[in-house]
Image 1 (cartoon, rainbow, N blue to C red):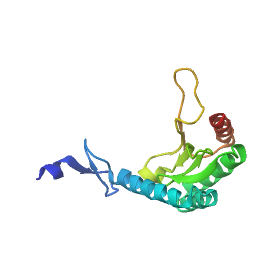
Image 2 (cartoon, rainbow, N blue to C red):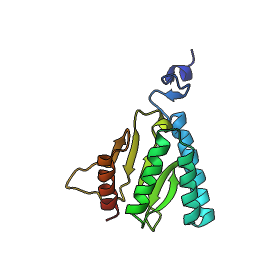
Image 3 (tube, rainbow, N blue to C red):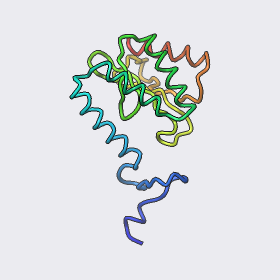
Length: 160
């Protein structure tokens, strides 16, 4: 067995190869390639808001259920409660950016990285600071009325 074969292992039935202690997984490499395409598209479109909205909606439409429904509802919640944010994609995921193009929050669907839950994440540009420690992402299994209320609070706080 070669050294390269020894350092690779197959992840839980996905057929994706991960290096045990070095390099990026295939999913991470794919996400980085998506991000590079997004940066080029943003540059060409001069950060066109309509194009960003369409890209985010296309990313949501491409998701399998139940992530698609959660992402669509989050999109509605964020657009209604933080109208200053513009939709776009970020590493292939729907994201919401301020007027300077800084991502404030994003949705990572569970299937993208074979996770057991989806994530609503906030970047370091989000205004969520609370003392010396605060949450910057939230696991989502499903959206309930209680979860939607918390999301609205966090999104409003994030944009300040």
